[in-house]
Image (cartoon, rainbow, N blue to C red):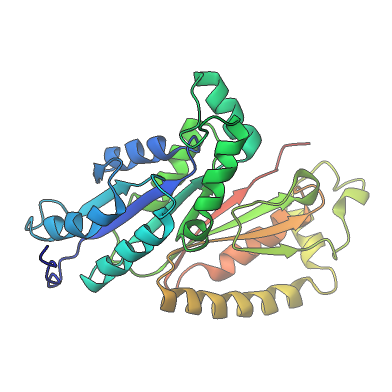
Length: 296
């Protein structure tokens, strides 16, 4: 087979959608299709370079390609890695979107449609899920964006995919999500970095501040007025900018920074708002998410 020659300034964008069965790959693919991407479902990894070569020869007719890839064999991880390396040699920097969910959520979804897991075989449903999770461990580790759909409905998952891929972009810059959360509700499993601001006094114990949130100016001023709050923001901002520079060098375009307190209502919300405001601009686009606000 003749190796495709590297395209010259093709401007082609490629997203590889993969992840766990039942985690939302089909929903993500349909969303990308609605956004104008040319979507190919269940393409073997070995054909990815051929798809890129065809797209580069379309003279702009196909500028953005999304390919859904799932586990077909135990060589899946190495096959995909080889294909992605070949694509980069063709002059295209592929992005990998990985969809995942908790075992409990996946079991519920498979049972609701009364279908076996594709890797279940003669075993239990959880065996198939565990086998697929293990096969995709390396792929998840190298993904550009990991979306956990455990607590998301279809509309919320579409919103996240739209936020990440709606713009055509120029391949530069970082799309950053700064998320507040409460430790008592669990860590956000898709976070790239997690900061703990429980070292600050809790406004929950101030009667007039307890019913308010970190978005309220009185709560914000109380949190920022505590010893160490501003120093933490200054130092953590510096650390994040150093990390983001490394992300840029490695071609990573998406990051999620989580900031946690006890309940995700006061301190983490106020500090998340401040951190996001500091990081916006200079090649970084920021969206703020307050995961547990209003959960009490």
